Length: 125
Image (cartoon, rainbow, N blue to C red; front, side, top):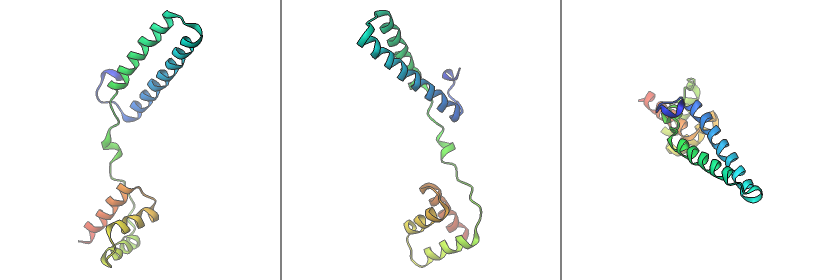
């Protein structure tokens, strides 16, 4: 049913795509074994037809919803840490150095560290 809808939950879409890729791999293996050992025309036609259908389904599967991945990460307020970062910026350290420090101390990704730095700068204005 998920094939016919444009909006699918990203977790379900990922499972669905994983199943399609698994079927795709199995069918290719069956096709190769058939061509090496069995040479049955009916099996070749059947697997090739199903492979074409799987490719169409894979192309029609919606990509993951990017909005879910790029949401702002909720980070607890830490006044002492924010003051240290603010002092770094005020003492002439670049944003890159501040982001590296945030990533190291808070164990964040690049985007979330940048958003955290922007939030600190906004709160101090």
